[in-house]
Image (tube, rainbow, N blue to C red; front, top):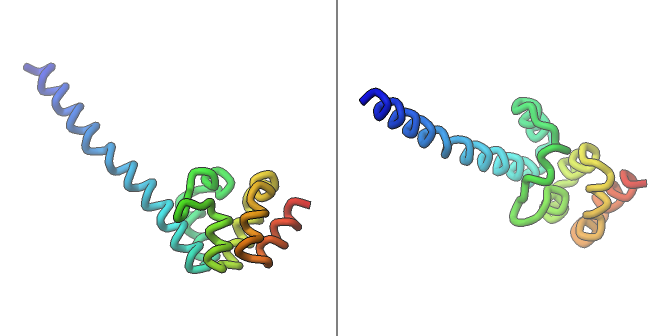
Length: 117
């Protein structure tokens, strides 16, 4: 009887916490995308600091409207947020996105080229 009770409570506890982590991660990505779309560099910076995140660590994991953060910033004409993202991501990652950035924002493409060189 005790084994059944312990097993049932363990399963219930695991099931209760599993959806929280998924929605928490989705919420973090959504917030970062919202701050980039709003061109709010200060809120983006403070949110990353508050959650103890490094942009270079989460850059590959976050997609905004199916695009990476740099291309999304260029499409959204978010120059300040885009410059911040370019400065915080590795030059190799920025180099991969230069052509796509240039289609949407000449200013961010110049910043990206300066970062790579």
